[in-house]
Length: 508
Ligand code: GLC
Image (cartoon, rainbow, N blue to C red; front, side):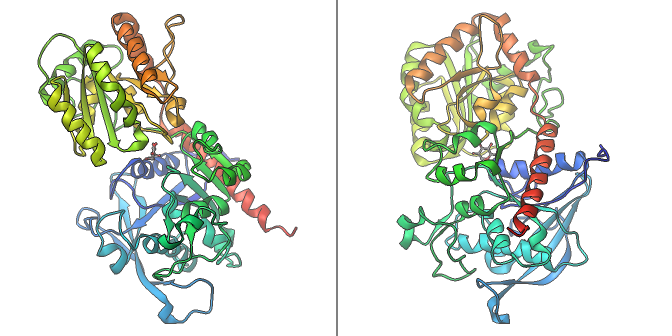
């Protein structure tokens, strides 16, 4: 699609720790593929930069070198000698399967090449400071390459980008003109470093010294806080989570700062990849279907039973859980409610996911005790599709949820979401109203076992009426979660970021 005259095409660089198809740990990796793509489809030039991890296969992703020997200062401000710099290369990959989309990969032997995983090293602060500063040095020094109007940094790993631009590079003729957006996919992880100062870190005013890359005596800091403090605009991945994080309940001790910056804070709901998640074309599922022939879908329920070794009995209700097994996902409520649920209601449950040992062993024990519970407790890229296509409902009782993609993917397959009213779950699922026959799923508010138990009664009562149940399925399947709308909203906030940056440069 071309842009109309009054809409200017923007040049946007996303800098992130993960991006599909190169490397994906969670939802962020997915978004770093889909959002730039959707922005390109509405006429913007969106590119991505990630570290070149050794796990990225150069045979599968052939790259060319665009900058050899990029020098990235290790120290804080100016006056550095050669010895104070780190050497990186920047490589470029053009994706033939994705309209030749450009991805830049920052190569560094010590910090990325020798460490294949994305997260979890003691030198993480240095690794992310290096990505931030490396991206900025690349943009600043690469005369022949492209130069963005906006840089989008994501989560705490990107928090130093806005910080560097507004401090170290505030007089730089190139970088000072570039606006920054800081995207919060999860406020819980903040990147707080130097364990010796942990207690003080929460009070990091964001104005003190930036840590030097590679310096073990890092000054106290909170990466997330710096991103929020300095970015021209801040966004989260749903409007509701953007409101929630300005409260003490969800603010993770940053609510005061977020309130201060409220006029720069926006919430934009993520979309899902409609090409990848489509029950009419999904090559993995056995019986393809759409909202008009839900009878076909029922056959996938039998396939799901086979896959999980559930007894091939009548049409028992199947609940799916597809989740990272962490506290965020509300599993503590499920742990309290599950036995009363099993003792009172007739249903089966399949669980796909991996995570904290507390939850892993809980599900392992539960499976041993109850033949109606089956689990697959490791990450699987394909199995969730069988759950979406075959289970009657998907349960997501999250404690907090910046956006959540699973409910949207499941809905596309007519798998009815049962969710807690929080974050993006509240923005994407409308509670079933039996009087009006409206709603796309079941929503409960309180984070406790009674609320979940009560909702299960509503769910199973409704399931007894196939006509009403199908109505919910159909409405869920036709909900619009395409990326196009979200991409337009992102373009708007990027323009705001450019304006804010210009305003901040005007003499007072
Ligand atoms: C994080 C959040 C999740 C969100 C995803 C993508 O993983 O926990 O709610 O959907 O990022 O933005």
